[in-house]
Length: 149
Image (cartoon, rainbow, N blue to C red):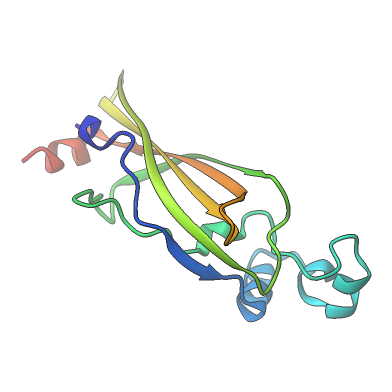
């Protein structure tokens, strides 16, 4: 169903890791650690500044793969992982893109399920990778039928 999109990626999008957005995100996930919001604590840390929570890349913009569209309903968030080369620093600009890594299908009790593997990448402005996030989206039989029409 999505094999034609495998290895396709979006054009890069520039994001700024804004202090206010990091504070709101930390509050929303219930993690009040000072490293995220307290400037003095950030300066005293080994990072010499505030950093974003590990799952913060979830709210960044990654652009879209040309011609690729998923419905807003009926999908299952199957899995997500984050791998960091270094922390994401508050105030920095980063270049982000998304890539479709794989698509495969498996038969289940409710019909055929599609598994879409997507990877989001954040790099500094010199092209050095900061993080990689991989997500698996499960597409149910009902959604697969609707998409194939």
